[in-house]
Length: 486
Ligand SMILES: Nc1ncnc2c1ncn2[C@@H]1O[C@H](COP(=O)(O)OP(=O)(O)OP(=O)(O)O)[C@@H](O)[C@H]1O
Image 1 (spheres, helix red, strand yellow):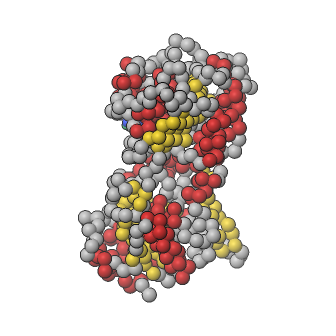
Image 2: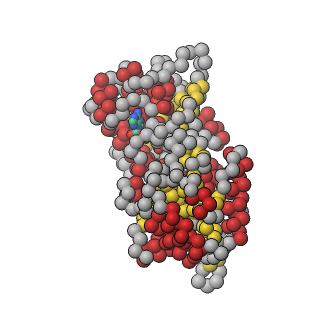
Image 3: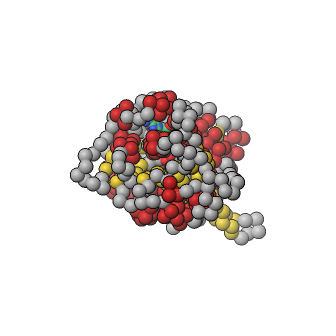
């Protein structure tokens, strides 16, 4: 790869842009330079998260609750029984294997089920139980005897809407009279029909058409409106306005609930437009640190040299599990092909794969079928595999200007303090520029954490203090890495 190649910082983009791109320049055959983009949109990322997640994301951060009426008592529940749910619904919850409410559910559920109805804006990271929470609120809210739509739920894409629908169907398994319909493109109904399903889940465009153009739904009879994935919603062209137009059709007594995994200023402004007089619940993400990570760098001359270094490390990589990060999918493909030719079994995540294919690769990796995963930054979102104890930055993370991308570095190798899993990071340095980047990263984290987290060139001097992964054989690292140093 050319030395001046660069990649966008994913975290920055996620906050600002419509889509996440990993962009790079490469020399084309006719000598010109070509721009390539590895795109993953936020809705896909969110779907990927849902497809691969089977349990709650553990989180120790405190929930912040901001009540509209600060004088009213703050309810929180530790058990589902306390919510006084219909028995068939409680059975559905237990049937899903939920024993007790998650952190966010402890506070959000009593608020959502309160009488008179309360509006809510809730933010917590992906996987903390938001979907399950509002699914329970929806099922508890609707009256099965009334054969009209009472609850509208909108999500950014067809696939995300289906995921929510599946949770509601599973949770409502013992509530046979509650029905749901999907307001998604391609789901055509005859003109003049009035929907009898109590719940409609869909995408903003279709749901808006069903309410206004086709009148399959009477928006004045909607008593609960749920907007999921607000951050993804506003990043999708048109969805923001359509969501607001749906909301304007509803009565002022309709209960409005909005959920988001992140809360930048733009999401906040949107949320305030959609949810009047809200109660607010926030659960902050646990900070990642480098405290338990041993970091090294290896000096190489060019990519072939980096490849040799990697092959030398390979035996150690596969004792535990490793993720290797490349700038671009082209580099990831090159590396995967070469590792495979050498007889190594590796998995690769690539931007060309469908979200289902990516989920399947992550699943196999999680189950240990492959020990090494090669990926680009963009594709790696959604991977949180506890047994990954080694991260290799085959290419160092840089931002648009070619400077060190510290956030991405932390995201790749950092761990949440609580679980404190030990880790090991190897950075491949192949130019004076990348040496400069490694220095920038080191300085940044020293300043930032007020503590020196050295990125060592040699393994040997600190080898003795490394009580690393129990099964890790460091001697092989040392011997095999050194040939690569200048
Ligand atoms: N109380 C609970 N007990 C055990 N598991 C739960 C509980 N609530 C949710 N889960 C499970 O945790 C996982 C994440 O939950 P959920 O999908 O509701 O989170 P989320 O915050 O909506 O995530 P996303 O933002 O990705 O949609 C799911 O597999 C879900 O079945």
